[in-house]
Amino acid sequence: MHNIDFFNIDYLQQGNAVQRAVYAVLKETAVLQLLSAYDPVLAGTIPIAVDIPGSDLDILCSFKEQEVFKQDMITLWGEASGFSIKTFEIYDQECVVINFDKAGYPFEIFAQQLPVREQMGYRHMLIEHHLLQQHGEGLRQEVIRLKKEGYKTEPAFCLCLGIDGNPYVELLKLETEQ
Image 1: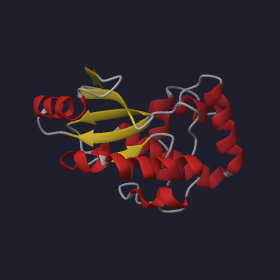
Image 2 (image 1 turned 135 degrees about the vertical axis):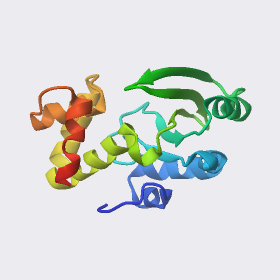
Image 3 (image 1 turned 30 degrees about the vertical axis):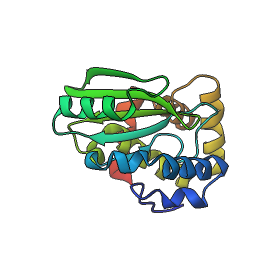
Image 4 (image 1 turned 180 degrees about the vertical axis):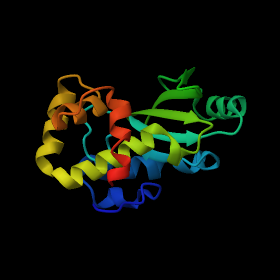
């Protein structure tokens, strides 16, 4: 799994059992196709195989108009089990988070006006993927162990690598090293 186009989920077919199951669910539910107007990408822990049982299927999106996006999400998944919609700001960026359950999986859609490739969640995933390639299976297993203890992904990576400070900011400093 070297250079992966995370926008094309076909890579999941060659992955571990969870990744293959997620591929099937994404195809069966057509979630990514339904979100196609918002440049969706599966992100987070599952694409880089550091997920733990109960991990969300994290999908990043980009919207032009927040209210239109929210209305589309209500139309698509408002009746789904566990549906919720939240809005808030991170680093002066308006964010919308949609949660729902579909086909036995918890989904979380995170959207901003910022293009997906510029969003922190996508950038973190690329950096973490690169770190896993550099450091190998030992790092992957240690991150998973810490996540099972309750750590979030970025703090787990930073703890494993001895990186101090705000893990969400410090990881982004590694982008130039890729």
